[in-house]
Length: 430
Image (cartoon, rainbow, N blue to C red; front, side, top):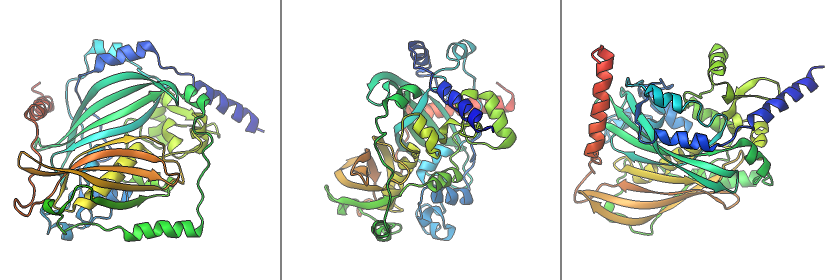
């Protein structure tokens, strides 16, 4: 008896969710935030790295390197203990005390881009120090740039680049993450239907056997040193498989610690409080239940409402897969210094991704032996879904194990400033 009214109510909610627009006023107000660094004061699912959550995060991205999982093995490496995959810095946060946004700026930038759909379209990491068990990570962040572009998918879009600095309780900079986000109108994207002709991929037993062969051939470099002198420009980095993508993969990524606070999926009374706090983020599903807008990563009906043929992954999942590929190649004694990626296509449920790459250059800089590489992810439709480049420090037969990259003095000074203010507020002196 209730089926028709529920469907009508759900459709009204979906229609309402796709009526929000990218306005010139929002764009101009967003520019007021450029260059404003603020302490990240929220508590993520993981606030302090531990052996167990490091292993769990590695499992969530399919990384089986014993350096991240086995304390006995890790004790014999240059690090002396388990370290986290460096990308784990992106999901660890303990609240950093800091001055709030000035009241006038907060008022002028309230409710920016309300109801607008956000895609993570790429990112850039600089890694400076490892994450050890017992390390709490703190951060501050701000908007670095904002531009407006025409979009084939959604009429026009806004591109925002933000910068987040992650550091530990010893004031050591762990990493700097720049995220490229694309903001689009849900209604425009839904009408365009650019990807509506894409059909879900299916696999025969023979297809799956070929995929299993790819996985079986993969190897962790691990303790075997890859020396700078032995690497040649043009050399292949090998091949790594990821997929075919399933909802289980997305669940495992969340179970590994990806919280996405303050938009993290929550349960029961916590979900109730979140719905009251950020109501536009909740859109009714086909059963009339308000659910998170980010469910397009596992809910095909909602993904189709905003112009995609099926659910798809988080872009940051593929960024982690690429880091896995690079760190497997360089071995335990190497260090991924930087990673830059551009996400060019969606990775839909059922899609298979193959990561490949090659060495593009070798150089020495400030005593560091650096290998530059390019990489890409290609799906079963022969589409490049991600492309990018990285710089990797390798051990040298002459110089031995590489030192970690130096932190720029101005960046370290900013960390020291933020940490001093944190302690002032924590002890009541500020």
